[in-house]
Image (cartoon, rainbow, N blue to C red; front, side, top):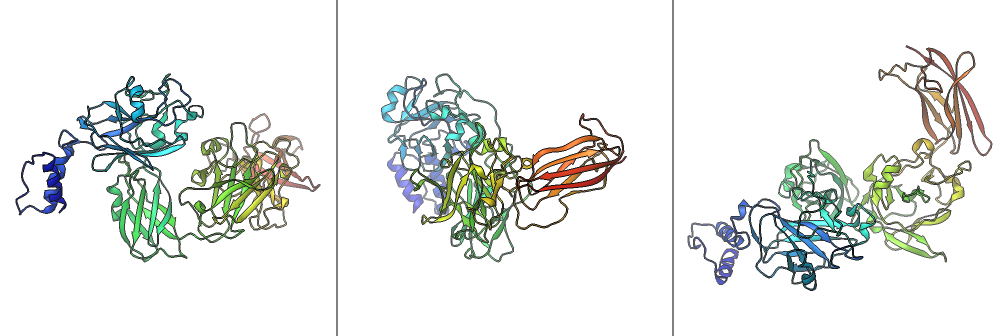
Length: 597
């Protein structure tokens, strides 16, 4: 039926087919495919099978033309024919999340030619600087970010780009007047790694090669970020970039561990194809975490994984108070730094953060600046940490981040440097956790609190107890975003505070036993430590720690040098270890260690 319907449409349009479909030995699929190929020749001027993947791509986006830098104050999108064949643009479309604009006129885009798409009211001004096509309806571009889809006359996605302001890599240019440019047209799926703000003095390069043009190949395979349930019997795997949509639908790439459910159907989700939906032959169980193994997936550029990757998925549950807690906060960041809030799943539930919000309070003490944590499903599994911050890149530059995947970018409410409130709300607006912090909760001997986070000591103790919070340890870099706190403790035990891992060490650079590790473990946070090494004559030779704020447990290291970094002779050394607490407690211990050959 489809085949002959298409035939009638083509004949009505005056098309002459190379062979009428009257041969009944030919299958309906063969007839339909032959008619489709013939019709494709109406907008590809050659056999469409000869056109490479992504023949036309989006190469420049002008979403925020104000304030004016040099270009006319109109939005536009530039497209580029990266194939070696001309293409008729009639019937092509540009869409965003809410509207679609069509090209209603014949226009041949020659190989390696650029053209800009714009609103009809902008065509006159923009045509002075570039070839222009005015769309029937303009999909207004959101300044903060949007999903743009370039589609052929059959509605098939040819290229899609989901941009946001971070792609500018320049906070000044992100405020308007500058275009976003694609760096390497041969890497159409590169995402944020292949886009940046224009460096042309006019603010952009419509209709010509981009100012940031350079080779920027995608040599890294896609990363599996997370998963979420999309229906009673379905779940979605989320990747950091577009996949080979045909390759990703093979059942051989996916395996479910320790569960009887079998995979029924696999589909790559358009238009970005960075998500894969898997349907099971049974419902996803409510009380089980499924472990999914993914192997040999190819991304859009053809890069393939060498090792299998595993991800968890399961049905989320609504948390009760105390099951998801505020675990760490940085409210007084370094200059050019950003605040962060760390959450900890203190339950056995899977918690969907897209159902929760972060807020603060206004001057009247009422809830204010309520911010949804995620616009799409984002699961936090039992025992997991997640740090929320406006700029994850800046956070990783200033602190040790053991797990970058445990960071989520979010425009947080304001948190004043002296005191303030952090409130965690569920989807009903009920308070799950609340922290009213004060800078006096920091260790009293810290004079400059800038860049030092407050850490929760025990997730099971009350949030609002000042004794359950302490400054992050110096040995941890003064913050632990996305992993266990340096001041974390669940129980205290008596005994020796300091110990050495081995009675002797040989600092000869052979990679074996080159350091003396001095371990410590305190029964409460806030201790200041001092460790000095003495020789057998009683003379101090090395200050290993001098006034360092310690965590609850950790270690110091000694490489066998003196205070002038000279190698010390072999022999016996005495380590005098002391710790002082602001409450007046003092600890002293002596340890013996030998420098040997």
